[in-house]
Length: 148
Image 1: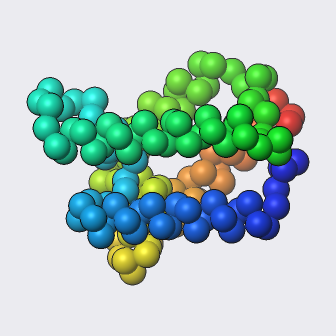
Image 2 (image 1 turned 60 degrees about the horizontal axis):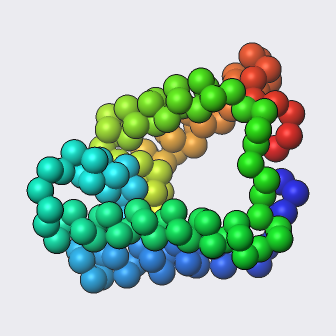
């Protein structure tokens, strides 16, 4: 990673923790991104629940864009990664987070912060599968390019 800095990683982690804590304290909801996206996509009614979820997701996109525009050290987009693999990956992550009753943000950030054993097991499984998948995709099958 070319733009890694301890200050950047620490401040990013603090911001994620503060945002997740505020969401829990102010609304009683866990900041699990897959659940938030799922309920926005499949909710046909316009309610307060829909509004906060849509605003949360908008904040993620706008925040990422502001970071990209405002900081020279922002990582460059990977142009050599096959689009079909991104699509397959997204579908598998969606399926896995549904099967695991939560995603890495829900279990890894929020669940571990609440000392949930279920979230610890889920996070360890997610990380283990990520290591195996990355090893297979990059080093066995040679997909995904060489930068990174």
